[in-house]
Amino acid sequence: LANKKFHPEPTKVKVGNVEIGGDTTVIISGPCAVESRTQLLVTAHAIKKAGAHILRGGAYKPRTSPYAFQGLEEEGLKYMKEAKEETGLPVVCEVTSQNAIEAAVKYVDMLQIGARNMQNFYLLKEAGKTGLPVLLKRGLSATIEEWLNAAEYIIAEGNPNVVLCERGIRTFETSTRNTLDISAVPVIKSKSHLPIIVDPSHASGVRAYVKSLSMAAVAVGADGLMIETHPDPSTALSDGPQSLSFDQFEDLTKELKPLIQLM
Ligand code: PEP
Ligand code: MN
Image 1 (cartoon, protein in one colour):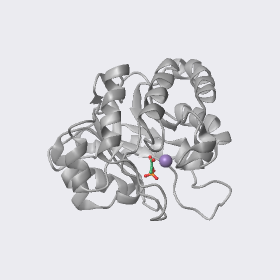
Image 2 (cartoon, protein in one colour):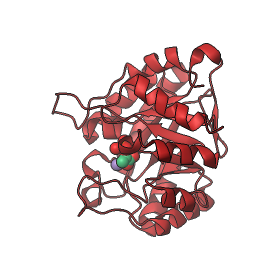
Image 3 (tube, protein in one colour):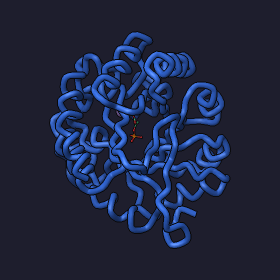
Image 4 (cartoon, protein in one colour):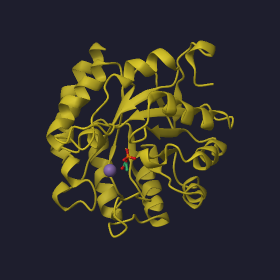
């Protein structure tokens, strides 16, 4: 079902009023985690002003340490919905369990399956059953074949609205948090009809590399970008070092604009 051989036309996925896989490069942005109502609303307005199309924000955070901030859960989802109503931006939120899915369907336009859950087949099926568009991140050490099989689980539930997200993979290199597999974009385009976006924030883990990797992603034909932003990255409860300030994000979208028009 994810294979291009049996479905040559590129799939376009509608998220609210935004189309991923269509003519424009879709920019998704927002904080790693929803930390407070104010933090989220301020961010939503800032990214909208800078030209982003979809708001992201984690309410259920799959953290490496059990002692790290785990997210506001349903309270965070409520703020996401409020941010959507205030700005008109559709919203995407990661779900990490069946409970999270049941709560999220009441508030969000798109579900995100994170890298750590890419092969949680039960979760993939449950996300598929909702019928909502699903943003499927590539697993930390997943091959492209494994990733497409994960997408297959969602589509097999009768839900064709899958968007893939390359977010860097584990390699021997330690200068960046992960290694952005830029070739995943043309490889996916040759094997599948599904749209693919790139997340340079989690791929690099370093704010200073986000702009150049975003440009590379657009140049190689990605259908969109996911970029973490925060009102004050130095105080962020998660992923501060890779998050852009609003000024940095605005500068990025300005520089991307001519490139997007060229592509
Ligand atoms: C995230 O998007 O905040 C996230 C946890 O990403 P990943 O699953 O790619 O690590
Ligand atoms: Mn993050």
